[in-house]
Length: 55
Image 1 (cartoon, rainbow, N blue to C red):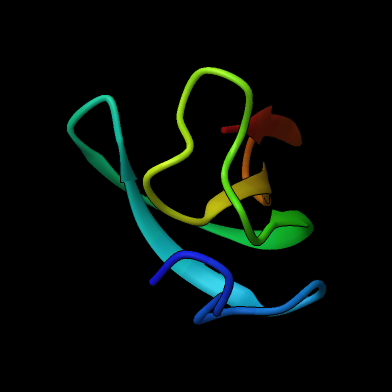
Image 2 (cartoon, one colour):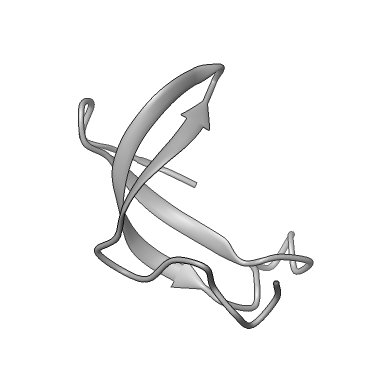
């Protein structure tokens, strides 16, 4: 829900990216969305296996 993030910074999460299941750590929480997407909370996640950022 907008303005009420489900996860917080440093949380370990499981997510789907390009059709595969991934694990990562949340590094940024945009509680009110982003410039192009303001309908839901947005997270930036570091993929622990590949050490790349996923949005």
